[in-house]
Figure 1 (cartoon, rainbow, N blue to C red):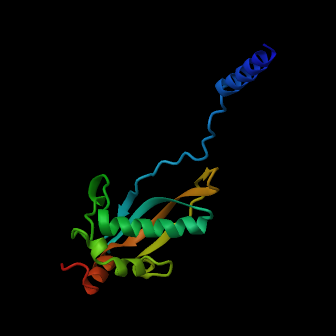
Figure 2: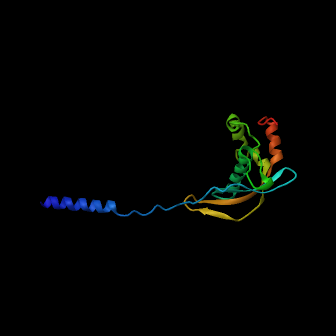
Figure 3: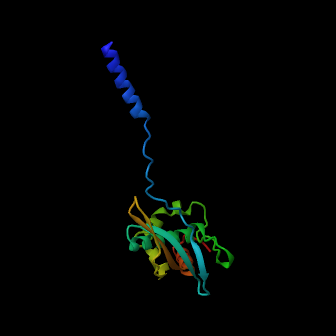
Amino acid sequence: MKHTAILFSIMAALLLTACSSKKPAIQTASYREQPTQCLGKSMDGHQTLQVWAKGQSRMEAVREAKKKVIGEVLFSGIQSNGDCNAMPIVDAPNARTKFEKYFQKFFEDNGGYKKYVEEIEKRSDAQHLQGEHLQVYGVVLQVDMDGLRKRMRKDKIIEY
């Protein structure tokens, strides 16, 4: 009888600890991918775009923003209101896969993409992502759309 009472006490203690409320999980980051926004289009073939990118430093975020915007201009185009819309420069199906080695080299940290994009406005607006120790920056960039199109023609990625 004594053993049964001890066993019952242990089982009750285990059951109570298993049913106790658990602390809610702490949300470490709340970042929603922001779309690239067109801020303007110039007559010389440049487009001014605001891009959101994250990085451990502002410099890293700007580098990622440049790669991101060139990738969007090349493969998905820019969807915006008004006359800022731009069709993708490389619109052939599976072009990214077909020319995989070319684009890997093109998008390296010191790759060819850097010639076609520059930061034109330094803003201090940033959001902090606690868990990842990252900052999210809104970066205003100018993209040489005509120059990029000519480069893709020259390198035989596109035909027209």
